[in-house]
Length: 340
Ligand code: 13P
Image 1 (tube, rainbow, N blue to C red):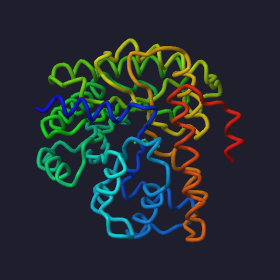
Image 2 (spheres, rainbow, N blue to C red):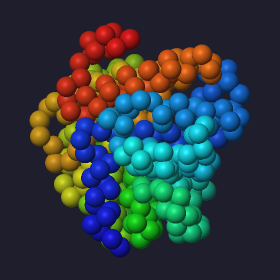
Image 3 (cartoon, helix red, strand yellow):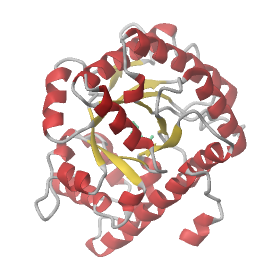
Image 4 (cartoon, helix red, strand yellow):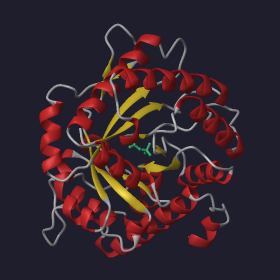
Protein backbone atom coordinates (compact mmCIF):
# COMPACT_ATOMS: atom_id res chain seq x y z
CA UNK A 1 0.00 0.00 0.00
CA UNK A 2 1.42 3.40 -0.99
CA UNK A 3 0.36 5.37 2.08
CA UNK A 4 2.10 8.58 0.98
CA UNK A 5 0.10 8.71 -2.23
CA UNK A 6 -3.19 7.78 -0.53
CA UNK A 7 -2.73 10.48 2.11
CA UNK A 8 -1.84 13.09 -0.52
CA UNK A 9 -4.93 12.26 -2.58
CA UNK A 10 -7.24 12.32 0.46
CA UNK A 11 -5.78 15.70 1.50
CA UNK A 12 -6.24 17.12 -1.98
CA UNK A 13 -9.90 16.03 -1.97
CA UNK A 14 -10.78 18.10 1.08
CA UNK A 15 -8.24 20.94 1.27
CA UNK A 16 -8.34 24.54 0.12
CA UNK A 17 -12.05 25.09 0.75
CA UNK A 18 -12.80 22.90 -2.24
CA UNK A 19 -15.33 20.08 -2.23
CA UNK A 20 -16.53 17.16 -4.29
CA UNK A 21 -19.21 17.06 -6.98
CA UNK A 22 -21.21 13.83 -6.78
CA UNK A 23 -22.15 13.19 -10.43
CA UNK A 24 -22.36 9.42 -10.05
CA UNK A 25 -26.12 8.98 -10.39
CA UNK A 26 -26.91 5.50 -11.66
CA UNK A 27 -28.78 5.23 -14.95
CA UNK A 28 -32.09 4.82 -13.12
CA UNK A 29 -31.45 7.77 -10.76
CA UNK A 30 -30.41 10.17 -13.52
CA UNK A 31 -33.56 9.17 -15.43
CA UNK A 32 -35.59 10.43 -12.44
CA UNK A 33 -33.62 13.70 -12.38
CA UNK A 34 -34.13 14.17 -16.13
CA UNK A 35 -37.86 13.43 -15.76
CA UNK A 36 -38.10 16.63 -13.66
CA UNK A 37 -37.12 18.62 -16.77
CA UNK A 38 -38.98 16.26 -19.15
CA UNK A 39 -35.75 15.13 -20.78
CA UNK A 40 -35.30 11.62 -22.12
CA UNK A 41 -32.45 9.73 -20.46
CA UNK A 42 -30.37 8.71 -23.47
CA UNK A 43 -26.67 7.96 -23.33
CA UNK A 44 -25.93 11.18 -25.25
CA UNK A 45 -28.14 13.33 -22.98
CA UNK A 46 -26.39 11.90 -19.93
CA UNK A 47 -23.00 12.63 -21.51
CA UNK A 48 -24.01 16.16 -22.50
CA UNK A 49 -25.32 16.98 -19.02
CA UNK A 50 -22.12 15.73 -17.37
CA UNK A 51 -20.14 17.77 -19.90
CA UNK A 52 -22.13 20.85 -18.89
CA UNK A 53 -21.08 20.37 -15.26
CA UNK A 54 -17.44 19.37 -15.85
CA UNK A 55 -16.61 22.11 -18.38
CA UNK A 56 -18.06 24.98 -16.34
CA UNK A 57 -15.40 27.70 -16.51
CA UNK A 58 -13.89 28.48 -13.11
CA UNK A 59 -15.55 25.60 -11.26
CA UNK A 60 -12.20 23.90 -10.59
CA UNK A 61 -11.41 26.66 -8.11
CA UNK A 62 -14.15 25.23 -5.89
CA UNK A 63 -14.34 21.57 -6.93
CA UNK A 64 -11.53 19.21 -5.89
CA UNK A 65 -12.93 16.02 -7.33
CA UNK A 66 -15.86 14.51 -9.20
CA UNK A 67 -17.53 11.17 -8.51
CA UNK A 68 -18.32 9.46 -11.79
CA UNK A 69 -20.54 6.51 -12.70
CA UNK A 70 -19.30 3.48 -14.65
CA UNK A 71 -20.81 4.83 -17.88
CA UNK A 72 -19.49 8.37 -17.28
CA UNK A 73 -15.87 7.42 -16.61
CA UNK A 74 -15.79 5.93 -20.13
CA UNK A 75 -17.36 8.98 -21.82
CA UNK A 76 -15.67 11.97 -23.48
CA UNK A 77 -16.16 15.70 -23.99
CA UNK A 78 -17.56 16.84 -27.35
CA UNK A 79 -13.93 17.44 -28.35
CA UNK A 80 -13.09 13.80 -27.69
CA UNK A 81 -11.20 14.16 -24.39
CA UNK A 82 -12.00 11.35 -21.93
CA UNK A 83 -13.77 12.86 -18.89
CA UNK A 84 -11.17 11.55 -16.38
CA UNK A 85 -8.31 13.17 -18.35
CA UNK A 86 -10.28 16.39 -18.79
CA UNK A 87 -10.91 16.64 -15.04
CA UNK A 88 -7.40 15.62 -13.97
CA UNK A 89 -5.87 18.25 -16.30
CA UNK A 90 -7.83 20.86 -14.37
CA UNK A 91 -6.82 19.47 -10.97
CA UNK A 92 -10.22 17.93 -10.31
CA UNK A 93 -9.57 14.36 -9.17
CA UNK A 94 -11.67 11.72 -10.95
CA UNK A 95 -13.52 9.36 -8.64
CA UNK A 96 -15.86 6.41 -9.19
CA UNK A 97 -18.94 4.94 -7.54
CA UNK A 98 -18.22 1.25 -7.06
CA UNK A 99 -21.10 -0.13 -5.00
CA UNK A 100 -23.87 -1.80 -6.96
CA UNK A 101 -26.69 -0.46 -4.84
CA UNK A 102 -28.61 -1.04 -1.61
CA UNK A 103 -30.63 -4.28 -1.78
CA UNK A 104 -33.21 -5.62 0.68
CA UNK A 105 -31.44 -7.34 3.60
CA UNK A 106 -32.83 -10.86 3.92
CA UNK A 107 -34.63 -11.39 7.21
CA UNK A 108 -34.77 -7.66 8.02
CA UNK A 109 -37.85 -6.06 6.47
CA UNK A 110 -37.34 -2.38 5.62
CA UNK A 111 -33.55 -2.55 5.83
CA UNK A 112 -30.93 -2.78 3.12
CA UNK A 113 -27.42 -4.07 2.57
CA UNK A 114 -25.17 -2.40 0.03
CA UNK A 115 -23.73 -4.83 -2.49
CA UNK A 116 -20.73 -4.78 -4.83
CA UNK A 117 -17.86 -6.68 -3.17
CA UNK A 118 -17.80 -9.52 -5.71
CA UNK A 119 -15.14 -8.81 -8.31
CA UNK A 120 -14.36 -5.46 -6.71
CA UNK A 121 -10.57 -5.99 -6.73
CA UNK A 122 -10.61 -6.42 -10.52
CA UNK A 123 -13.03 -3.52 -11.08
CA UNK A 124 -10.86 -1.21 -8.96
CA UNK A 125 -7.79 -2.14 -11.02
CA UNK A 126 -9.66 -1.20 -14.19
CA UNK A 127 -10.95 2.07 -12.73
CA UNK A 128 -7.43 2.96 -11.64
CA UNK A 129 -6.25 2.42 -15.23
CA UNK A 130 -9.10 4.67 -16.40
CA UNK A 131 -7.84 7.43 -14.08
CA UNK A 132 -9.89 7.09 -10.88
CA UNK A 133 -7.96 7.97 -7.73
CA UNK A 134 -10.83 7.76 -5.27
CA UNK A 135 -14.04 5.74 -4.97
CA UNK A 136 -17.41 5.87 -3.25
CA UNK A 137 -19.55 3.25 -1.53
CA UNK A 138 -22.86 4.25 0.02
CA UNK A 139 -24.49 2.32 2.85
CA UNK A 140 -28.08 3.30 3.58
CA UNK A 141 -29.59 3.34 7.06
CA UNK A 142 -33.27 4.19 7.35
CA UNK A 143 -34.92 5.31 10.58
CA UNK A 144 -38.35 3.94 11.44
CA UNK A 145 -40.28 1.86 13.96
CA UNK A 146 -37.79 -0.72 15.27
CA UNK A 147 -35.11 0.15 12.70
CA UNK A 148 -32.23 0.34 12.20
CA UNK A 149 -31.34 -2.99 13.76
CA UNK A 150 -27.88 -3.51 15.19
CA UNK A 151 -27.37 -6.35 12.70
CA UNK A 152 -28.10 -4.23 9.64
CA UNK A 153 -25.77 -1.49 10.85
CA UNK A 154 -22.97 -3.99 11.53
CA UNK A 155 -23.43 -5.73 8.17
CA UNK A 156 -23.24 -2.41 6.34
CA UNK A 157 -20.24 -1.27 8.40
CA UNK A 158 -18.46 -4.51 7.48
CA UNK A 159 -19.23 -3.92 3.80
CA UNK A 160 -17.79 -0.40 4.01
CA UNK A 161 -14.64 -1.68 5.74
CA UNK A 162 -14.04 -4.48 3.20
CA UNK A 163 -14.58 -2.03 0.33
CA UNK A 164 -12.20 0.50 1.92
CA UNK A 165 -9.47 -2.12 2.31
CA UNK A 166 -9.71 -3.18 -1.35
CA UNK A 167 -9.59 0.49 -2.44
CA UNK A 168 -6.45 1.22 -0.46
CA UNK A 169 -4.78 -1.93 -1.80
CA UNK A 170 -5.49 -0.58 -5.31
CA UNK A 171 -4.10 2.89 -4.57
CA UNK A 172 -7.59 4.40 -4.49
CA UNK A 173 -8.86 6.59 -1.64
CA UNK A 174 -12.17 5.25 -0.30
CA UNK A 175 -14.99 7.66 0.44
CA UNK A 176 -16.77 5.86 3.26
CA UNK A 177 -20.43 6.86 3.09
CA UNK A 178 -22.81 5.64 5.79
CA UNK A 179 -25.97 7.61 5.05
CA UNK A 180 -28.64 7.87 7.73
CA UNK A 181 -31.65 8.91 5.67
CA UNK A 182 -33.68 12.05 6.40
CA UNK A 183 -36.83 10.61 4.84
CA UNK A 184 -38.69 9.76 8.04
CA UNK A 185 -40.82 11.59 10.60
CA UNK A 186 -38.20 11.34 13.36
CA UNK A 187 -36.84 14.35 15.22
CA UNK A 188 -33.24 15.56 15.27
CA UNK A 189 -32.58 13.77 18.59
CA UNK A 190 -33.36 10.39 17.03
CA UNK A 191 -31.13 11.18 14.06
CA UNK A 192 -28.31 12.06 16.45
CA UNK A 193 -28.76 8.82 18.38
CA UNK A 194 -28.72 6.68 15.23
CA UNK A 195 -25.82 8.60 13.63
CA UNK A 196 -23.78 8.10 16.82
CA UNK A 197 -24.47 4.38 16.72
CA UNK A 198 -23.69 4.08 13.02
CA UNK A 199 -20.40 6.02 13.18
CA UNK A 200 -19.28 4.05 16.22
CA UNK A 201 -19.87 0.77 14.34
CA UNK A 202 -18.32 2.03 11.11
CA UNK A 203 -15.06 3.11 12.77
CA UNK A 204 -14.89 -0.11 14.78
CA UNK A 205 -15.03 -2.08 11.51
CA UNK A 206 -12.58 0.26 9.75
CA UNK A 207 -10.08 -0.26 12.58
CA UNK A 208 -10.60 -4.03 12.53
CA UNK A 209 -9.97 -4.06 8.76
CA UNK A 210 -6.69 -2.10 9.25
CA UNK A 211 -7.83 0.86 7.21
CA UNK A 212 -5.23 3.61 6.85
CA UNK A 213 -7.29 6.50 8.25
CA UNK A 214 -5.07 9.21 6.74
CA UNK A 215 -5.98 7.84 3.32
CA UNK A 216 -9.78 7.95 3.49
CA UNK A 217 -12.58 10.51 3.47
CA UNK A 218 -15.81 10.16 5.47
CA UNK A 219 -19.07 11.14 3.77
CA UNK A 220 -21.78 11.31 6.42
CA UNK A 221 -25.26 12.75 6.70
CA UNK A 222 -25.78 15.84 8.78
CA UNK A 223 -27.66 15.36 12.05
CA UNK A 224 -31.05 16.72 11.05
CA UNK A 225 -34.77 16.12 11.61
CA UNK A 226 -36.60 13.80 9.21
CA UNK A 227 -38.39 15.55 6.34
CA UNK A 228 -41.81 14.51 7.62
CA UNK A 229 -41.14 15.68 11.18
CA UNK A 230 -43.37 18.62 12.09
CA UNK A 231 -40.62 19.99 14.32
CA UNK A 232 -37.74 21.05 12.07
CA UNK A 233 -34.48 21.99 13.76
CA UNK A 234 -32.79 25.33 13.09
CA UNK A 235 -29.57 25.53 11.10
CA UNK A 236 -27.71 26.36 14.32
CA UNK A 237 -29.10 23.21 15.97
CA UNK A 238 -28.15 21.06 12.98
CA UNK A 239 -24.62 22.46 12.94
CA UNK A 240 -24.13 21.99 16.66
CA UNK A 241 -25.51 18.43 16.80
CA UNK A 242 -23.57 17.38 13.70
CA UNK A 243 -20.20 18.67 14.94
CA UNK A 244 -20.81 17.17 18.40
CA UNK A 245 -21.55 13.77 16.86
CA UNK A 246 -18.59 13.80 14.48
CA UNK A 247 -16.17 14.85 17.23
CA UNK A 248 -17.25 11.83 19.27
CA UNK A 249 -16.44 9.32 16.55
CA UNK A 250 -14.15 10.56 13.80
CA UNK A 251 -10.43 10.31 14.67
CA UNK A 252 -8.39 13.38 13.80
CA UNK A 253 -6.20 11.15 11.62
CA UNK A 254 -9.01 11.30 9.04
CA UNK A 255 -8.10 14.31 6.88
CA UNK A 256 -11.57 15.32 5.93
CA UNK A 257 -15.30 14.91 6.10
CA UNK A 258 -17.40 15.70 3.02
CA UNK A 259 -21.15 15.74 3.59
CA UNK A 260 -23.88 14.37 1.36
CA UNK A 261 -26.87 16.68 0.92
CA UNK A 262 -29.46 13.92 1.31
CA UNK A 263 -32.53 15.89 0.23
CA UNK A 264 -31.79 19.25 1.85
CA UNK A 265 -32.44 22.25 -0.38
CA UNK A 266 -29.31 23.74 -1.96
CA UNK A 267 -29.40 26.83 0.28
CA UNK A 268 -30.02 24.75 3.41
CA UNK A 269 -27.08 22.41 2.72
CA UNK A 270 -24.80 25.39 2.14
CA UNK A 271 -25.95 27.28 5.21
CA UNK A 272 -25.57 24.30 7.56
CA UNK A 273 -22.04 23.59 6.31
CA UNK A 274 -21.02 27.21 6.72
CA UNK A 275 -22.25 27.40 10.31
CA UNK A 276 -20.19 24.34 11.23
CA UNK A 277 -17.03 25.85 9.78
CA UNK A 278 -17.70 29.26 11.31
CA UNK A 279 -18.08 27.78 14.81
CA UNK A 280 -14.38 27.29 15.39
CA UNK A 281 -11.36 25.12 14.75
CA UNK A 282 -12.12 21.49 13.89
CA UNK A 283 -9.83 18.43 13.84
CA UNK A 284 -10.57 17.73 10.15
CA UNK A 285 -11.48 19.65 7.01
CA UNK A 286 -15.26 19.90 6.76
CA UNK A 287 -16.56 20.24 3.21
CA UNK A 288 -19.20 19.09 0.73
CA UNK A 289 -19.70 16.12 -1.56
CA UNK A 290 -23.13 17.09 -2.76
CA UNK A 291 -25.16 15.63 -5.57
CA UNK A 292 -28.58 17.23 -5.58
CA UNK A 293 -27.60 20.39 -3.65
CA UNK A 294 -24.94 21.19 -6.27
CA UNK A 295 -26.94 20.17 -9.32
CA UNK A 296 -30.60 21.03 -8.76
CA UNK A 297 -30.43 24.65 -9.89
CA UNK A 298 -28.12 23.84 -12.83
CA UNK A 299 -30.42 21.09 -14.08
CA UNK A 300 -33.47 23.37 -13.88
CA UNK A 301 -31.69 26.33 -15.53
CA UNK A 302 -30.51 24.14 -18.41
CA UNK A 303 -33.79 22.30 -18.82
CA UNK A 304 -32.26 20.15 -21.56
CA UNK A 305 -32.24 23.15 -23.95
CA UNK A 306 -29.13 23.76 -26.05
CA UNK A 307 -29.78 27.52 -25.84
CA UNK A 308 -29.65 27.37 -22.02
CA UNK A 309 -26.36 25.45 -21.76
CA UNK A 310 -24.48 28.52 -20.46
CA UNK A 311 -27.31 29.28 -18.02
CA UNK A 312 -26.97 25.81 -16.57
CA UNK A 313 -23.22 26.28 -16.18
CA UNK A 314 -23.72 29.64 -14.52
CA UNK A 315 -26.11 28.09 -11.98
CA UNK A 316 -23.63 25.31 -11.23
CA UNK A 317 -20.80 27.85 -10.86
CA UNK A 318 -22.84 29.81 -8.30
CA UNK A 319 -23.56 26.73 -6.13
CA UNK A 320 -19.94 25.55 -6.32
CA UNK A 321 -18.71 28.99 -5.26
CA UNK A 322 -21.22 29.40 -2.42
CA UNK A 323 -20.39 25.93 -1.07
CA UNK A 324 -16.69 26.72 -1.20
CA UNK A 325 -17.42 29.80 0.89
CA UNK A 326 -19.33 27.54 3.28
CA UNK A 327 -16.27 25.29 3.52
CA UNK A 328 -14.49 28.39 4.76
CA UNK A 329 -17.34 29.41 7.05
CA UNK A 330 -17.95 32.71 5.26
CA UNK A 331 -21.27 32.06 3.48
CA UNK A 332 -24.26 34.24 4.38
CA UNK A 333 -27.87 33.47 3.40
CA UNK A 334 -28.12 36.97 1.93
CA UNK A 335 -25.70 35.83 -0.80
CA UNK A 336 -28.48 33.69 -2.28
CA UNK A 337 -30.45 36.64 -3.65
CA UNK A 338 -27.28 38.41 -4.77
CA UNK A 339 -26.26 35.31 -6.72
CA UNK A 340 -29.67 34.76 -8.33
P1 13P B 1 -26.89 13.92 -2.42
O1 13P B 1 -26.01 15.08 -2.07
O2 13P B 1 -27.89 14.24 -3.51
O3 13P B 1 -27.47 13.25 -1.23
O4 13P B 1 -25.95 12.85 -3.13
C1 13P B 1 -24.70 12.63 -2.62
C2 13P B 1 -24.30 11.24 -2.87
O5 13P B 1 -23.29 10.97 -3.49
C3 13P B 1 -25.14 10.16 -2.33
O6 13P B 1 -24.48 8.94 -2.44
